[in-house]
Length: 163
Image (cartoon, rainbow, N blue to C red; front, side):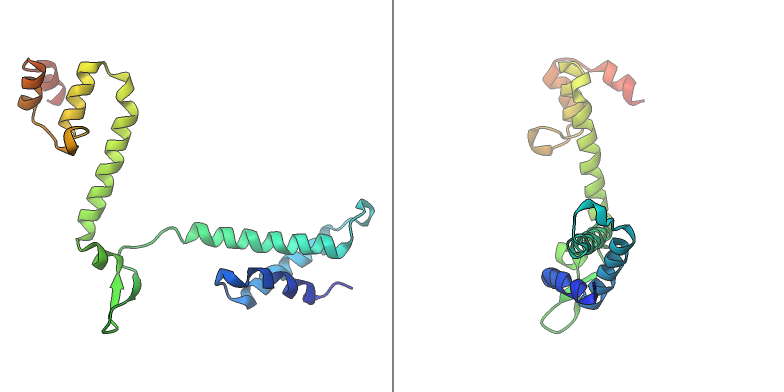
C-alpha cells in the first residue's frame, strides 16, 4: 500500500529549496492523491513509480508558482540589516529616491521601444530621432539646433513634427 512515506521520500529531494518541509509534504500529498485518482493499472506502470512522478511534478509546479510571485519586489521592502541592526531597503542601497529610479527605468523602456522602431525611418530621420533622444553620442540628448547644424539644415520638418 502507498503511504505518506513515499511523499516524505520525494520531498527530501527538495530540501535545498528553502521551503518549509511541512508545506512541501502537503503539496506532495496532493500529488499522491492525484496519482491514486488517475492511476490506470493496465498501462504497465507500478503505482509507486507513477505516484512518485506525480508527487515530484506537484512539488515542482508549486515551486515554479512561488518563483513567479517572487519577482515583484518593492524598493521599500527590507532586504537585510546594517551593523546596528537597522533594516536596509533596496532604495537605501541605490542611494536615490524611488521616483528617480522609476523615471530612469521608464526612460530605458521608452528608449528601447524607439530602438525597435528605428528601422522604419530613413537615415536622416534616424539621425534626428537618435540625436534628440540621446540614443547615440554617449546618451547625450542634443537640441534641435545642434542636430540641424550637423545635418546642415534647419530641420523644419522636425520642428513641425514637434508642435
